[in-house]
Amino acid sequence: MADSNIIVTPVDGKADLKAFVDLQWEIYKDDPAWVPQLKEEIHGLLTPGKNPFHEHAEHCYFLARRGGEVVGRISAHYDKLALAMPAEQGMGPGTGNFGLFEAKDAEAAAALIATAENWLRDQGMTHVLGPISLSIWEEPGLLVKGHDHSPTVMMGHNRPEYRGWIEAAGYAPVKTLNTYELDITTEFPPLIQRIIASGEKSPRINIRRVDKSKFDREAAIILSILNDAWGNNWGFVPITDSEVAFTGKKLKPIVFPDLIRIAELDGEPVAFMMTLPDLNEALKPLNGNLFPFGWIKLLWWLRKPKCRTMRVPLMGVVQRLQSSRMASQLAFMMIEYIRRDAITKFGSTRGEIGWVLDDNQGMNAIADAIESTVNKSYVVYRKGL
Image (cartoon, rainbow, N blue to C red; front, side, top):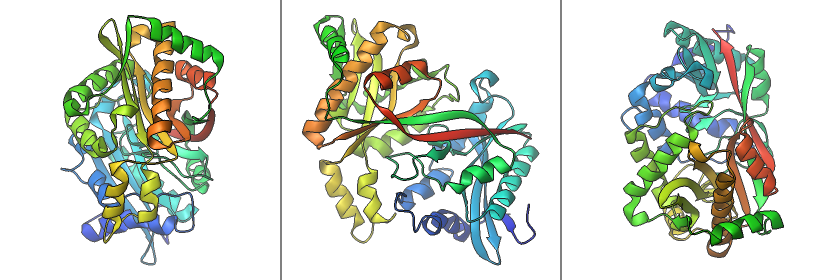
């Protein structure tokens, strides 16, 4: 504990867990850019037995109080699958994490971070990466650019003050994750159009929609490409079968065949692009609650979403094709086909791609080629224990 007026205790029982979740509504009550997520979903992510992340991770949630008032929260956790990864990929032995970080002031922040570090040290961790909430596949990084506009589906939002508080605790930036935005109503530059047209003439290339009636099969194909394509990336941690099932069930209502493409080369699936309608546009007015009438509004929206923004959370090309002209061609073709359907079938005008690692030269080059610009940046910090 860094301040004598602050008491930090582990979350114990339903009342504490409710306070842990509800704190965001107090922290961001005057922030028009914040998008409240469904409280039921948040509880599910935090609860072992519901979120399969906990099958291979250990955690402790903490609340900070001053005079009985909750003034902050944090998670300390480590992923056993991450501990088994090579250290040069960012994770590896001794890597602990903090996440789900919220604080009302600098004193609460310092006390929470120190408590999380002590817990991780007691667990045998030698350094901390954070904030990561909870898995690298969920909400990694602290928002440092783009506070003035709302995040899209499955992206985080933080107060600007957090950056100074985390850095004051001795953390240094280790990686920046960017999102790119673009006006999808504008056609791509002539060079990109020529590359797409050339691919359309090739008998070797087939860009197809996913078949939602064969959801499990398609998910397995995408996962196979993803694990191959991202396997050497910084921060990569394998996704378990139970996590695939959990995420698939959660995303199935916003999975539309027009927005997900698999690229085949000589009949073999070698690339994919997943696009999601921005569910946050529908969630924002609900203020975290489905009842009494929120569920009706959400179900109506899910029948046939009309939304301004489409987000591309995942895209990948198998490693053997990476850095080749073919990889770029397949990417441009998938982007173009989804762009057309997003406009005509969903009424969308804006796209967001990300997150993209700041040193991912291939994806950054593709983003530049289609004239997109960085609209948000998230930083993952590191500190030795």
